[in-house]
Image (cartoon, rainbow, N blue to C red; front, top):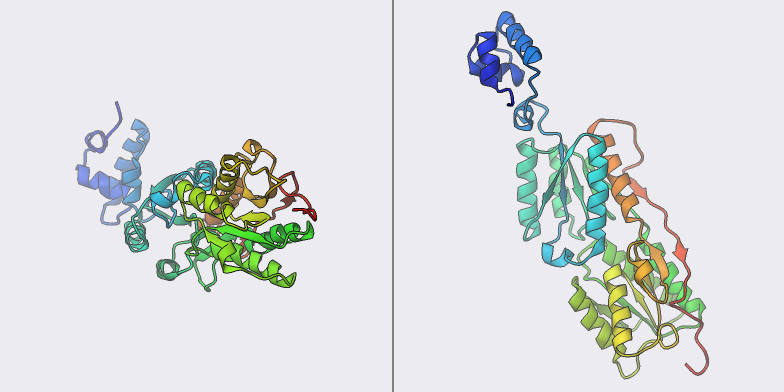
Length: 343
């Protein structure tokens, strides 16, 4: 049976309120009473609960993880489940718990986050995506609690940091690869432009097209939404055009899987009839046939490094700059081929 503060009070011959004051490091206690309580704690091998520790000035040993997206927009996206696992493992190494927060909108996210910070429920915050509207970052920066963002940030902050990949340059490389194969009618199947990652990846595609002297057609830049179903409908519509593109650049794993599915159902051979490049992860890529020519996002590394940097800030340990880039590489497989004259 677990030892309680009542057991300590009886052994130390003090009131339970005195025991509580000792546990919470209050000063209005006589030295004799404090020593008797501490002796009783050692004798009974009392382990204070996390709630009791939270009542001290230190607060909970926990970090808060927020996606800044509603659960409707993250369902079916392998990025979020993978990165959460990585963060949980890293936090466990530091002896910290992870609190996962879900909200209906950004305002509710902010309110919940501020409440947990002011109540000392968390010592740091991990944000799994970076909204284009950085209002939540501006507000959280005022509370002097480290905030680590998985994604790009544009503002200048004192307590907000980021770890990311170079989404603009990676998208440029993926589009440039298709151009090097002779493709000119290249579509971009992208996510909504509410987050920096989506903006940066679309911008990389557009810059590569412009640098090659190719027109950027608005009707070939298709918003595939957040869900697997909306992405599939967008991909299917794209391939059913009277003059479909010869190649598609897909900006995330959900879009990649959707274009593969749409091509299969419309009996369009990859890469003979449609070449594809895009972003994926090591748990999705092995399932794709033919193998994807693309960038494999180091999801676990992003979570591990981001969480590690957050703990560096929490414990005031020497660490890297406020913005860290995790390297990636272009993996050339068989989903994109050189265009032929008859194609």
